[in-house]
Length: 132
Ligand SMILES: [Zn+2]
Image (cartoon, rainbow, N blue to C red; front, side, top):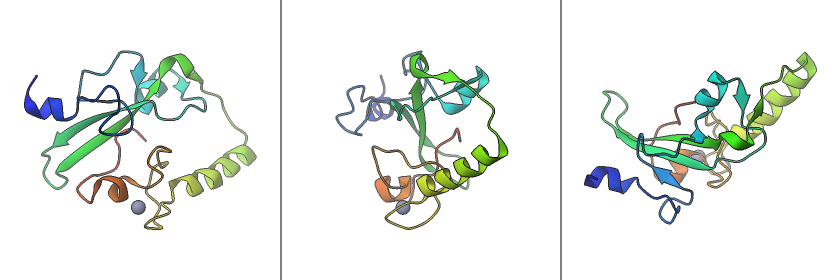
């Protein structure tokens, strides 16, 4: 395993607070929101279980990237909501996206284990997680 990959290999969460894997090393039962959605699933109330971290050199947005992972065994089928439910959800999610430190809407639901946006938690070179 190269040094870069070892940097992000933390299955016990000692370093990053939750289990952390480099790309392609994460256990197969841990999926991103996008991967869950592709299977017609949603996290179903579970918090983030683990994360994938990698260093991106993409022009314009270099830095450490994070994708949060959910356990497919706790996932539930997607359900369709009524307009009233959607409005209530949008309001609740807006509150869950607002960082208590910088007061900004992070654009994603703040991970409970951090309590803040990624910028406040990991520094300004971190950008928002992939799957939203
Ligand atoms: Zn913040």
